[in-house]
Each structure stands twice: as C-alpha cells, then as structure tokens.
Length: 324
Image (cartoon, rainbow, N blue to C red):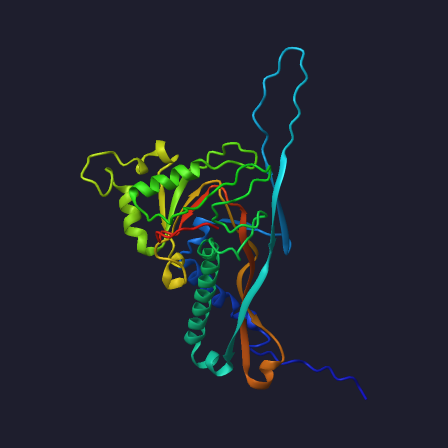
C-alpha cells in the first residue's frame, strides 16, 4: 500500500500567529496606560536565573593617622547580611470559543484588556505589599531576620541596634515629617559609619495625599499662622525637593493602611526583579479541535524584597506603640 501524506488543514488555531500582533498590541497598550507606580518607587532589575543571592558589605572605618616610621593599620570590608531572591511564576488561562472569535472579536479584545488590567493590578499589589507588610515579623527578606521596618535592626559588627521606624506611630504632620527625616539621616552602616541617608520621596496612600502636598509644597510652614519658611520644600534641607508619590495600593481599600507613611532615599534597596516580564500568548494544541475552544495564556515571573533596610523610614501613623 502506498504511503499517504496526511496534510493538516490550515485553521485559525494552527495559524494563530496571524492575529497575535493585534491582540498583543491591545495587551501592551492597555498595560502601559495603567501608569504603574511600582517602577517609580522600587528599584527594578532583571534576573538571568531563577535564583539570585545578594551579598552585602559594610565599608571601611575612619582612616587613622599614621606617624612617621609607623606601620599602617590594616582594615577590611565587613561582610554583613545576604538576601536571596527566588523568582515565582504567576499566570492564568483565558478560554475563547471559536464562535466568539468569529462573531464578536471586540469581546475577545475586551478580555485581553481585562487580562492586562489583572496582571497590572497584581504586580502593583505585590510590590506595595513589601511596605504594607513591612511591620509584620513573619515577612522578612534581609539577613537580620527583622521586618523591613524595625526599631531594633541588628548591626553585623555587634554595635548598637538601629531603628528605621517610629516607635510611637507618629501621624503625618509638618513637625513629624521633620522627625522622620532626621531619624533617617542618623542611620549608620554596619560599622557605625554615617551613610548620608537623605530622603527624596514621601510615599503615602491616597488618604494622605492632600496633607502630604500641603506639608511639602507650601512656601510657608503648614498648620501655623507664623510666616516661617517651609524647609521641607527646600533643596538644601532634603538633598533635593521632597517628591510626593501617592500609591493607591498602600491604602486600606487595597488591604493596606490609610495612616501609614514612608520616606525613601535615592540609595534605598527595595527591589523588584523580573525573570520574565508580563506576556500573553495564544496556545496551540489539540483540545481546540475537539471542542472549538482555544486559550490565551498570560504569565510572568518575578520576585521582590529588600537588600538593605537603610535609606528607608516608616511610621504606621496610628499613634500606637511599635516595638518589633
């Protein structure tokens, strides 16, 4: 019997790439239009493998005086704490019937937009969770086994523990903002050296947006009849005008707090790492041939955490004692 070459018929399922560009354009356009705050707040990097270890070191101490003929004193960089980043995977499938694709393509495009929004929301919420859960002792990343915000961060050299959190949950006011700024500027490295941790971002939930803008953008001090200059708006005081960033995913509506507020310096190490950025693709398999259903798959791989707590400061803003 002669060999028979069976030719698979061309179908929309087997030629899905013909319509991929349009769907993908809708996906990426929608994703970009959502104006994510994550990249304005966190340090964003790419990962080349599924795992990354970041090793931290403290700098050298003060340079000692050397008398004529004396031997130089030896010093060495101090290995402090490590942070391990492990990329996790997230995604979902979107089933689409052939009939829907044939008769109501706009609905298919609408589902693509919905998927883009879902991914964007998830990424934003995950990124903000680092701050939202920053006082929870079950959430640790840095090697000192403390939450992101702690009043007792241990020093690798055994020196006095340090704080990057308000122990009394001070509310956001002009005077309390100064307290936070000064507290952050007092932060030391693991050998007790000044690191010049100068804040340039005041990060707040929507409920504190108005207060944050009044405090930082007014020419005069807020909440007083005096005509004093508002130093929070002065470059000389903050190392650069204090930029207010409002992140919706910090608020109570997203599971966060309407009273908590945060200060960030340009050298902070709150990290978001992409292994695979969000993408959407159409799946080709034999299932569609049986029930006239095909699938779009959205997925991404990422991880987040902090490689150091320094250049970050926070207050719960609830007026309650905090001792972790």
